[in-house]
Image 1: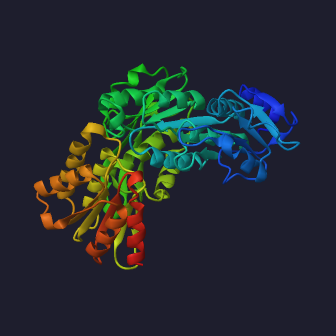
Image 2 (image 1 turned 180 degrees about the horizontal axis):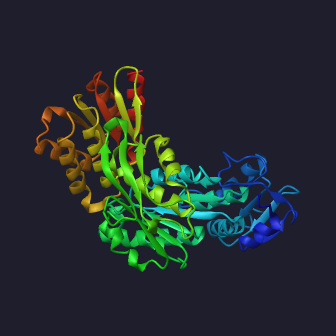
Length: 476
């Protein structure tokens, strides 16, 4: 059932004051961007580091906004008759409070996912498995921060059974804030890696920040944790609720055996679910089932196992989980295999990158296209701080054993990756560097030949998607 929100109810939930408009005016939608606002939306004037939404109040009204939430009363003055105006102390805080209210009133159960790698794929797999039995909402794209998550949770007013959301961070304290907004019944911790190391003194500190996923847990809440990650397992004893583990470890509650990396054809395994993995009163009996998925690499098998562990908490049968795994498709830009008409197989992993994910992608490339030349276009990984050169070099050594051609993209750290690959045995003539992805696209278009398998991966800020677009056009 749809949750109806009046102007007065929104003002109360946001700890604000209704200063104009009718109290019983029903609000149908929400927006923080006057450019994409739909007529009838309530415009929240967010004040950020690089922009102030109060400067766009008039633009929002001109596009048909039903009202405005703002902290600048001057911007709320002299609005057209009938337009709702809600004054708050802080619009980000108001958005978060409103989202928490909607989350509580919606009746939906919430699954929240964090980790250094695999969050989005785990989210999509979890939503797919649960979607075989329930109506499911999941947050889109990168709407996983202090603004994006609450905007996503406002969609729970439409009445789904379950919400599956990912929680992003690059500083300590952020996961705790997001958990406090989402109040999840099921929490998933995929892994720990050196992503965002620029903002932390160590990987252990990153693990502690991720462990904020435990905060506010109740005794009947569930943590789904990676049994193969020692940094995760060293901390799970702090969780107040029930812990269900996943992985290839013999002790995992949801476990994979007989694992096969089938290269470009995905992964296969036997999925085992122990009695501990099931919900308290399961309708789906634990057991084992053959598992196949077109997702690439063993790292994605871990994501599928995490999703399976969640689905079992909702009594989704193993047979349904296996069927859902077979039907999974990669998120665009996250390990998407594109077989181009010009005879090139392109692995588009250009959406983002970190050392853990890059090493996994390179190993997958190593299992792909045996007997064919393998090429990698690798963009610099950002936010790694003083460890950046060393982490890039480590990935370069992995690349040396996999590729026959390498293009590195970015600054000094990307150059370090290429130098390490040469030092590890890749011929100097096989390695090329480009300062930008536009330059890399030209180099790749000349380097790549018909029959090659090409991996493109890099941090979002490096824009290696430009390389993907060029290769797709070149070999169309």
